[in-house]
Length: 369
Image (cartoon, rainbow, N blue to C red; front, top):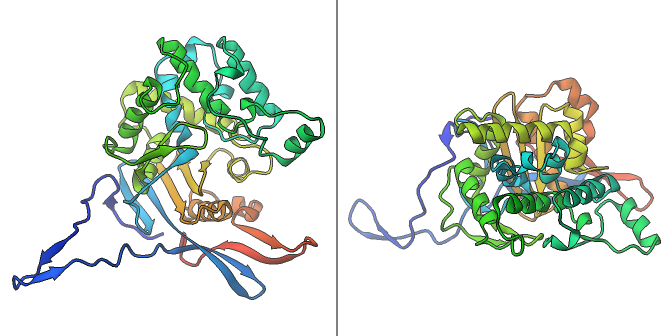
């Protein structure tokens, strides 16, 4: 792993327009655009690389030092669901979590992008009932479970999915719980200007060390705002979840409780046949991982106080998973014997219609080296 002890939390903006060289002659700025992102993942078929996935990634410590980076980590990305642990901080910090007598299982579900299996939906349903609301109070929308077996079973029985099946239903239960506890309207809790979302924005600024008042933002798949944040700053926030040494006491306590729940319930974070759950189970709690839409991924290594963030340019999940595993391995935080047991996490088989392996999805040379 290469080392670059620069800070991920600052940096100067790009200068556009005209410049002057030392002779006083006017020189035109380079308008060719940013350099192309490096290739992070390759897809082979037979003896040839058939496709590649470009992206950006970094490993950052809790002091904000960039220990390794691939590509531009100052440009903003939408972190999507990769930062649900940050979005859960107000649930704990406001006292809402304790006021309703919630457990680590609910806290893990608040940080999850779950499969919509019965184990997930029953927990979300019980949570909403506990706080005196119904599924109709959700504003995240509904979709079929992402677990194929559960989805097929529902289709066979003619069942219609509800918001409980939404992979973000735990996070939204947390938002509703916080709003109720603070005496805020539950209606419209997904809006950018709602106190729930503004509170999360403030927490995100503090955790990432960024002024996000003029950051780009859009609407996530589950209807809440998603804020453009530099990739290096996202990794820094993850490192601070792993080692909250410089956070205020109340926030450090909230982060510690979230980390504990995240570690204790890897199945609730995602579910059956998912990379996130498999990676955390294989690592025995030594690493926490979370993916987001459009191939964003993060990891927390608590013992080392490290955070990892990556973004695959084309938004392909298969590339996110392989790249994130390679980056985790690059930290050398996990023993070699663990990787021997979990070798399948470092690559994915490419199969034909007969189920025969014809290629592989693998980390490109130099990723994690």
